[in-house]
Length: 379
Image (cartoon, rainbow, N blue to C red):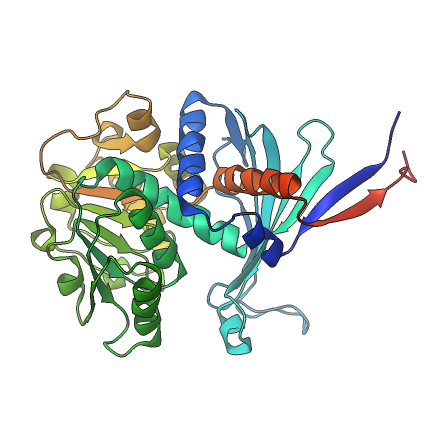
């Protein structure tokens, strides 16, 4: 019996060479993942099999001098998953996050993904996952744009021009290449992130020839066919979350919400089309987080779980993307409906796109093969 175990290490540059920034292929992989999830061919963490992950945070006033203290986005997290179908892969994304990283010229979060043999648990690959995670995060709204956005979509509104919005815009261009106008709302008219976002669009997508940096959320979303809202908002007080008035939204618009967003309850309950990336993820959060969970996780569908808890809403008022892809629910329930699409983020996404990129790397001879052991010392 061969007991030798080698695994592939893929640096960030290796990942780029292996196609991690191919958004069209990423959207296709994530759509396939959603179909598999609706069939039940997946597992995530927790007793419910749908947990976002396991997070370790720090106390605000640690008793020990070397222990980190709580701060904005200061945490470690493990996100395990198995995904079946052609992926047939287990893995875990691990990351540390700290907003103070930016002062050191580092990303807020530093992420790695391990892919494992589903039977033995042996590592197959250990890969840089910052770009992978960014692209899979953008591809999830992309699947929503593909199904809910108008075929002739021309205008995109961006609220929060950070990494999530950059890759979501890549996904929008991949599925609706006729986009011509982009309106960007940053922290101010002169914010560096808004300027960089505009420069990136000009360089990468010359067909999107109308680029405006605007002062208000209303200016960004009025007449927009597609809206991406992804701001770095403090949690705890929902009244401070970015607010979108129904009157500002164009009939037929799709609003992707991978971060904090707030709408009027009357709109949510009576006129909006509420869609989740995976309804069971939000049910798991409702079980795991203290009520009201929306104070901790500021995504609109989490607020819907709180409304269900309060008896103001029922589960059948929420559509699941997997049901729509499987044909169990219509793509549109009525003409010109406004879709609020909640994006929670799941480790199945990392495993799906990571598996594709890993297999690309194997075919292309990219990466460094490392040895775990020739024979285990304690078998």
